[in-house]
Image 1 (tube, helix red, strand yellow):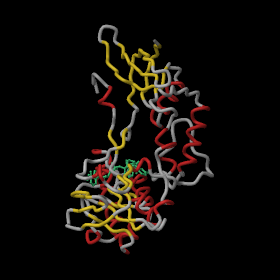
Image 2 (cartoon, helix red, strand yellow):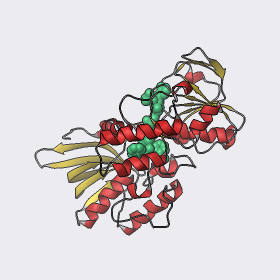
Image 3 (cartoon, rainbow, N blue to C red):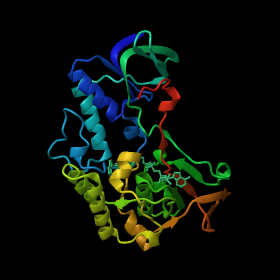
Image 4 (cartoon, helix red, strand yellow):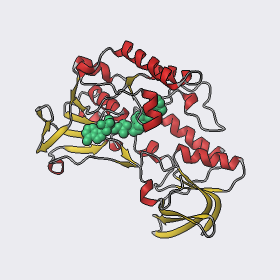
Length: 327
Ligand SMILES: NC(=O)C1=CN([C@@H]2O[C@H](COP(=O)(O)OP(=O)(O)OC[C@H]3O[C@@H](n4cnc5c(N)ncnc54)[C@H](OP(=O)(O)O)[C@@H]3O)[C@@H](O)[C@H]2O)C=CC1
Ligand SMILES: O=C(O)C(=O)Cc1c[nH]c2ccccc12
């Protein structure tokens, strides 16, 4: 049993940054990580062409700015290098292969008791701490919806977290399901690799580009959110025109409101919108069923596909282990 002031669950950027701040204040802490490395989503479950969508000044962690010569939008590998340097320079010592099974607050001793399975040893370990920080992320477990016939689908079906690049999909009919940032960018990547690409867009979504988002982020320092939302929606309309005829509807609420209130980020266009406009990427409504290699859609379309990439988002795992919630 190890006792510290603060137990941090999750060694992604948020958990690492929390540990760095506590180290700076000389407050004892431990970072527990389920995977065999820190920043596992960045290292193992993100596609090759990924770059941060927000400018570097909005993505740096405490005590370590990006160097002035770093590009404005940091590519994935550079962000991973940055995190490696961060961990070594700020004295962070994440404990990997530590799968948190339960965390509850013991009222008698005023401490959190966290039970962990050491997945290397298969043994159970315990930690006690005055504070618990949940930094296990919103993107913990890939979510794939239930679709009638999916189990017998004749082609390949993967979650977006397993997608690296489009190399092997050239000439294939590929369906991307989901129009969040992963889905839109993967569709673009597939199309660039010569795949006949379609994308399912089932709900309204804001489409902006990174320059408009940057303008919004800077404006938020001076202006209220509803004004910034109006301005960025207008800029989006000037840039892209009316996308409803392409099958992309706009939500009623603004993009920064939706990010702040519901955690839903706008889709940052990296080139897919132009491909949708030219018909290189085909937009489809929800899937109704799958039969062999045939996929049926809500508008009555039926087509044959070689692969499906489910860019349908993630589920948080916190409710699986957090027993008492004082938040
Ligand atoms: N460069 C960057 O900074 C990047 C950042 N990200 C971020 O990572 C996070 C995760 O992104 P992402 O992986 O795109 O996941 P998201 O949760 O953002 O998007 C999931 C998408 O899948 C759709 N969906 C879910 N179930 C179905 C279904 N049954 N049929 C059709 N569509 C469905 C959702 O639609 P609905 O709204 O209808 O549920 C939504 O459009 C986000 O915050 C995103 O912004 C991602 C990629 C790159
Ligand atoms: O990480 C994401 O969800 C992004 O795509 C970048 C992002 C973070 N916060 C935002 C607020 C408005 C627009 C995009 C983002």
